Image (cartoon, rainbow, N blue to C red; front, top):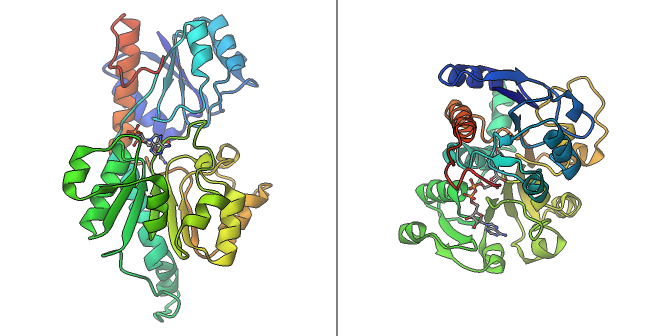
Length: 332
Ligand code: NAD
């Protein structure tokens, strides 16, 4: 039984091949993104297609997969904004995902971004290697006592809240559903606007949906305190990049850390060193000394990759055996 992988990287092969020893699927790894241009590369009779965040599973692609007899789309990620779920339902293709794989991996990266920006460890690293031990320009601020606003307190947001509480921050949060355990730990739930109003630091941990595109834009930025720090490890489309650039220029945003970017599919997960980057927006963003961009690496820990491989293969095995996987895993 064959699983064809798209956007496959060497580390995907390593972790999936290792976990597949217990399953025995035929694994075929393709480096290219999945999209209308390449869907013909899927072999007839392939049981499952395994896709990642920047693969485009549009209605057109899904129709082509169905024609080739594909039964399962297995997303080796949590987010699924890149899949037309209605089309999958229409063509009778089951869609599974990995709802949780070490939420701590992403939460810890969000905090690492904040600490890098604030304490300028990236600058200190380079400076000391040049035998420059001056502290000028490295001034930071204490996180202890600051108000951290968290949008979305699901698995990752919850892990982030715990970390922020551990640093001695006051944590205020907005989610459609309040987490009782977090409330007991001292997290204060309030409205979205109140979180924006109170936060010294804002971290986004909600999914991207049609309702919350550009959640952070001109209007919402105006509510925030001048000097706000914003961290986005969730999805690029939550932020209106043009508006954020304007707020960086005026100093309204003091620090911005993004692990995700709206136009990331042309850039992220690729080694483009030596190439001309045509995307002027990301170039502008990267030109700010107070902006840190990482290439969708928040999930990238050994623990997370191991869980992604195991959960994905287990779900595909269950579907091939006619066993219904956990509801949290199944999208369609
Ligand atoms: P989750 O489903 O456990 O939690 C999401 C939370 O957001 C839920 O509690 C939900 O009620 C809440 N929510 C939904 N819409 C909201 C809104 N408009 N405003 C406020 N809250 C809202 O998901 P998770 O595992 O915590 O992941 C969160 C997001 O992180 C994913 O959707 C994905 O986009 C992103 N992610 C990024 C990486 C990375 O490597 N950068 C890795 C995994 C996930």
